[in-house]
Length: 396
Image (cartoon, rainbow, N blue to C red; front, side, top):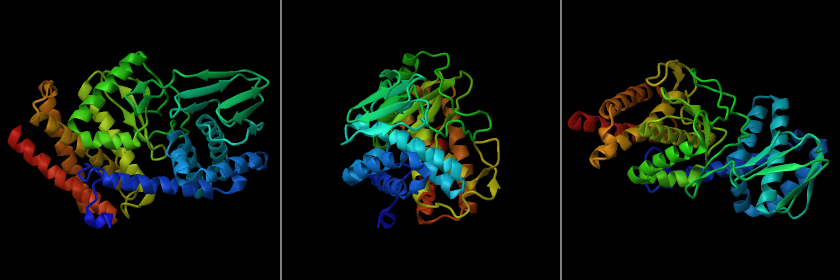
């Protein structure tokens, strides 16, 4: 029914109905995957922990389960465990499953939803625990040999715990700058010019990061209010990975929806582009969780207009889906006569984005074998891009 009425996952012209639909289906898939992981993956030493936590999760009902799995610090372990199992990497699936269980105990303790204590006296699968949701992180000294997760409290045996409440500075009401990260995918990097996404403030203090991101979020809220409302539904944390005055690099992972990794750049438009770009990746990545999108998404490879290396159509689609809304931002800034339009290189950058989008969409239209939802996404982008091409031709 949704597909027949119109599917808008690039620009939310349907009041974000499509995005809410995709988000709901994604979260339900996560919940199914959580309860489908084989019990033996967790190990015999954690069987009672698993039973206690999963029984309590079930008692929380659908909304309680969805609230837990939507958190990237939870579902990153779940998605990695699932993909490892599909890839027949049983040791990897076991490791991620134990990390998942450890994180669940932490989150449910902080939530205050545990109805009985959970004793973890097995080896700790993580070096520390982080919860952007609760804006808390927990570490322990080497002498700690067990943790007891209680309702709204955690106690240790054999050593001291270290709680930190300052690792997640707020960015408005919904988002945080995360200064602690446990994503098992953060060392993986698909971009040829970067090696992983290790957390780093670089040469900037925390205030430099929060000021820059707050300014970018303000531009998005003013010029693309529909996308900003979508961000309030999906996005959760920004993770800093250094500073660079010459170039900007950012990343997101299909296994960690709600997370954006990015470097700090002095130009406001560059940072704003990066936020929109990676948020769009989060949206389309949710779609890939529940739909193949294109039958030939990953093979063969094609020349990409925005990357130096050949890319599968999956990458070309992600590039176009990321930058069509960026082009729309530029168009709206011109229409509103924003001060940002007077920045050096603004018009050239606008033209370049539209030219790159056109090239990417030409590749998709000519070569993609999309599903119904994939076709709807491509059609929407083509329509928007025609508006941008005409605008650039007539106005610039």
